[in-house]
Amino acid sequence: MRIRPRIVFVMYLAVIIVCAALYYFIPSMLSAKNIDVITSIYFSVITITTVGYGDIGPVSYLGKIITASEAFVGIIIIGLFLNALWQSYTQKIADDQEQILLKQQREKSINRIKIYYSFLDTVMASFKLSVAELTTPIERRRELKFTINQDFKFSDLKDIFKFSIILTRGFNKSVLQNYVDSESEMKNELKYFLANFDIYDYPKLHESIVSFLTTSKSSDGYDGLISIQTSIGNHAIINHTEKVIQENETCPDINQHQSTLLVPVILLYQSVKEQIKLINIIEQEFKSF
Image (cartoon, rainbow, N blue to C red; front, side, top):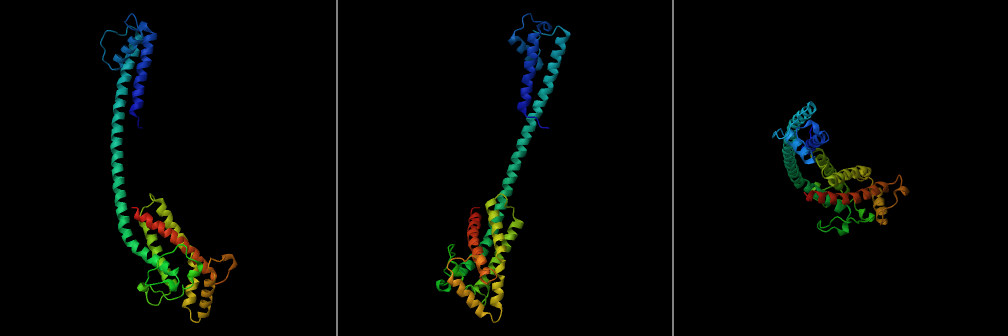
């Protein structure tokens, strides 16, 4: 049990005051003729410190018992006080060492995150490029100089079945397939990051990554769109879906399109909207390190 030096000091003063009160109210047990407040406090102090000048002393058995007890208790309290000081000093050293270690671990963790982000940044850039292409109609794509637009319209998804002009993932992939592949890579890297890095001290980053993974998981329903475009003889269905998308500038009510091909497109639209918001937050949080 750790005792604070302040508490021990208060105990020491309390013993002095209590014993001084006894000397003052029972003057017959001391050799002095006139015991006033100052004299009783004086005798109590020299007794507890075991100085003992000899000008005043106990003359009765009660006086001898009280003075001896005060001196004995004083020695014990001094020992407790010194022990409390030592414990306080060693605890301060331990706390300082712990803070130094925590700071070193924090700096090491931040350096690891920075190194990892240098790689994650390329994955993030690839994902953002696929999102930009997904949400940009063909007529507005010029030499890949298109960027993500948070306010893209539902009708802007009309060319998701067309071939992608981002050739880093192959020459025969659609815009949708290219987006799905880059999203999958992004999710895998973020899962790896959560599993191997302690970021609980950065709640906003942790929450944003978890939200991104949750949002991406909820978008798995548009896998059916990919199966349609890769199947033979579905050009009519694809053309019809593209036409319906183009006719809706705002996102249709999903409740009014149950069991239709437009449902996965609506889910895709809602998911991408949220992903753009989250990926910007994640990027800002990483750059803040």
